[in-house]
Length: 274
Image (cartoon, rainbow, N blue to C red; front, side):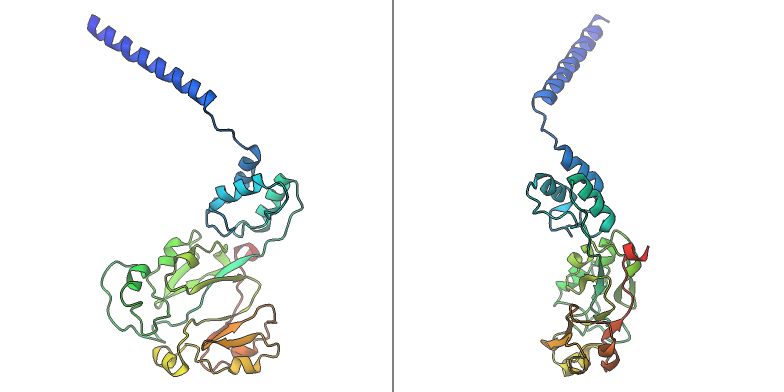
C-alpha cells in the first residue's frame, strides 16, 4: 500500500512541476499578439484561397496589420466582396473600397456531343492523373478532361460535370479561384461577373485541325473580329479573345460565330445574385 502511495505522490509531484514550468514558459516565452491582425483575421471568410495575392487569410491579415502607409489595399478579398472589405476598412480606420466581384468560367464547350476521346483511360479518376498520359485523353488536347478536380476543389459546390465538361453555376461562385488553380488544362479563368460574353474554347490549333477535334471549337475565322463594332474581339494564335474594356455586350460576336464558340449569358456571382 505504501508503495502505491509513494508512486502516486511522485506522479502528482511531476505533474505539478510540469504544470508550473508550462505557466512560466507561457508567461516569459509568449509571442506578442497583434490585436489589429486578430481583428482583421476575424473579418476574413477563412477560405484561404489566395485570391488576395497573399498566403491565405492569415497572410493577408498580417500584411494589413503591418501596413503603416496604406500600400496594402483593404478590398483584396474577392470571396468576401464588399461586406468584408468594409469590415476590414473599419478595423484599419480607412475608407471602404469597392471590390471587383469575380466569377469562374470554363473556356471549353467540348462535351461528348461535340468531341470524342482518343483512348479509354483506366486509372485514378483525376484530371491531373489523366494529364500525365499524353496530355489528355480527348481528341482536343486543349479541352476539359472532365474528371472533376475543379468540382472537388470548389468550396461552394458551384461546379458540376455535365456530358464530360465542367460547368460553373455562377450564382454559387464566390470567385475564390481555387478551381482555376486546380485545373491542369488551365481552362478555368476568373472574370468580372458583370460581363456577359465569353469565348468557350481554348484551342490554339489551326481551324481545320480544331474542327476535326471539336465541332464547338474556335476555328479562328475572324468573323467575330471583323463584325465587332468596338474592336473588342481579336483572334490571337488562332483563338478569339475579348477585351472587356472595349466590350459593350452587344452580342454581335456571338451572333456571327459559325461554330457557337462565343457564349452570351448572365454570369452574376453569388454576391450579386443575392
